[in-house]
Length: 180
Image (tube, rainbow, N blue to C red):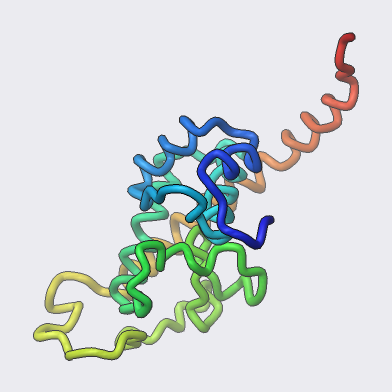
């Protein structure tokens, strides 16, 4: 992965996808569209994760649902402390403490996700208190986390089921030789 910001074209080349394909992902996942060489390595890592999961035949609709749950959970936990338009992608590409990280945003929740040890009143932002608690407003971080865990488990199961087929396909491709 490049350490410097990239253009959309450079990311497309890195992912072996067209610019049109990446622009479609940006639109369907409501990702910020930046100009020039403004795409961070974390942004590329997110697109790489989407591309990898699609290669394992995980439906894009499922990934969008997972993406929405992750963003909702991060909003409920007030994780946006930077004001960056890509704050929800800034952890992508991290490789430490993977059991504590969300699948797509790769945000570290501080506890192993499957343990359901999330602190419901955890607030990463410094600011004025809300007038109503999230539960009173109809949002509950533990409920969203529960939905996330179910869907994330389904995605992981789909990937595990597809792995032998991908291995076989890779073995089969060794027989292919370019014609000259």
